[in-house]
Image (cartoon, helix red, strand yellow):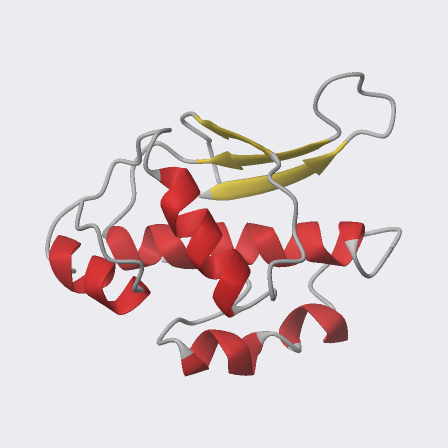
Length: 132
């Protein structure tokens, strides 16, 4: 992975031709870039896990009764390419922002969710409800 902090450089480095399998040590780099570029560093670091998920590429979970990990983002273990991985991580971060900063009871695909579409487009990403 290049040492630069630019999302465009990372996307160019990994390309869109090959499958991307995220590793837990690389996710914080992308998370920090998205947090800085889209959310103005307002998000804390949630627990992020990688596993095979049936019927989804990512999940945001909130458990107010959890003692250790109240906010959790789960990502699928294989993506079509690096850009899809970044878009899914960003998508789940929007749900996290809705819950943590906007204090919404349910972090759904509503007007506030789609208000981030311009910020995503500005850095070359798509924000949509369904991927693939």
